[in-house]
Image (cartoon, rainbow, N blue to C red):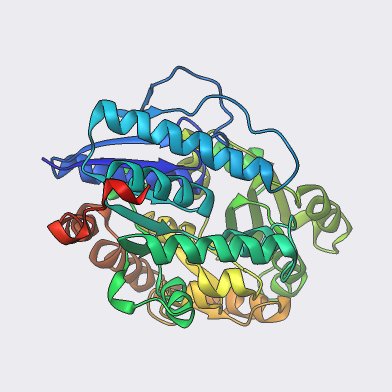
Length: 408
């Protein structure tokens, strides 16, 4: 029975796209009979026991602090996590170390792999230097941006195998000189066991939110600049010209929330734009049930061209129509005219026209819904896709992949 230790930035019981992907991976691996645990670094800020069981998964924590100026602080952070991984390896004896981005986790796992002789699989979910640019905490080409990219490239070179969540990330690594044979694409997926029969629309909830009885466009997620929600809000005045009863429902929060609320309040279609704020994760399905179309108007950038989001797949699994901007990450998930519709990014009028056309062709909705669900079931179901991890593990567990203890 293969024992796998996942090295993570943060984990359950925190809720994020990162932790939900981790949960889906580990549950699917457990279903295959693997013994699986996780360990988080110092950036898992939620207090709790060590180890901590969350939703049937055991997570170990890294204790202590990493003080000092930028650079030294991160280096100390890597050191603390590497030491914690090594201690756990000596106690639990995993067969494989499976580290997940950011590169700080990868570098810590690399140190531990060299000390213990264990093979390392490194999985990239996004390039975090690009994510920092996307959420406004970094700038492209800055010293920090270049150092982060350099560290990631180092981890990729030294790992026994590399996994990416999409083809865009894989192609970027190949352009950096990585051997394509060392990279496995493990597409973003959905745990379909969590998506049974979608709940019925709650008329009382819809009325309390002022949605009326017309079509509802929805977005459920984090309000980052790269999500393009300002373009979606700007599209609504154009949309209501063709669909006067249409409403926009925005569920979530984040750095752009205050600015987006101000933009909506100043819109000539303010009456058609409704904010809910953050809702408990167990309540999210109730809000999906209020919507007809889920909109994903991401702006065009390196981040959105290279990385596939999870939300459109969840929407398809919920039987929702999907309208998304025509960026690389969306094109890997949405086939225009079959599983959803694509529109030009950074263009509110194009967004409005795509939404209006979809709303006007109600006779096509069942086909879109059916093909979207089929797409998720055939290509993005974790229960099926997780076998690829087993294949990667079997490759790195071969005798030639074992690291020498002297490499430390």
